[in-house]
Length: 331
Image (cartoon, rainbow, N blue to C red):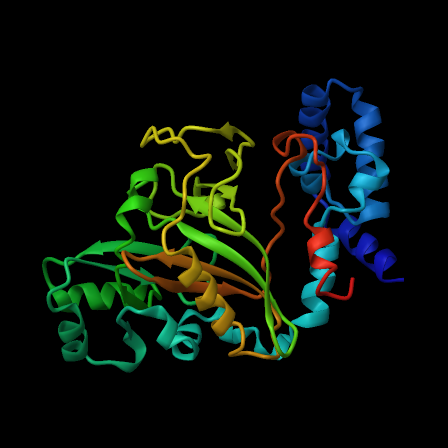
């Protein structure tokens, strides 16, 4: 019944023009007939709750029935969020100021709420800072975020930020020098996927997000992502939103595979502790920045997203992340 409801809702909200566009792209890449791919996409939507983006991103056209069953799809992920994350507590992750209040000790940087502070408070906050980051409270995907150089009229700046509804202003994160070697135009972050079972936190997966020609690392804002092993080493090429396979960063010219994330153990311990702060939201995606000798939280997500290594990247293993999730979650 849940699958049927999800399917009907998906059909109602589906962008058919985009689906046909993706089908055409996959047909060309897979070298299989358009109608074959279209009907296979529909089949996978019914059987595995896989949308056409899932089908393309996780290359279902390369997988057999047994392999497809191991992949976490957006439909399954949505059901996990609904099951384990109490909606009444989502605001603690969605509202950036509420998040900063709740997880202040994990942020390791100064911040100010312009709605509840004076001009003098703001001037004191900006003292000795060359740049700050201003954020809208409920935007995502790197949108509504500005990097601001401190010069000129402070009162005018404050008024402008308030008019833009960028009420949260934070001290800029200075990331680890080794991380900057990959790309220094943005803070590049780890996305940890955690599940708190009431006693213990389990890290289900971790990816590394890298910026590209922008000051945010978000996938939807031009960035790329790749995957980490349990020790924080990058294990496969990165991909961007255009589905390009990236082995060498186009800006820094650094080789991506094999890069070791510094302070990875500290980052893991950080999210394990943070995940216990909201017991009513058990399944979270944490964005973590690596500092020179430490790690800090950037944000948390009540919808952690779906990230898995492409079958064409995994040396023939062809196993999705669902196997790992099933060790700890009732799926």
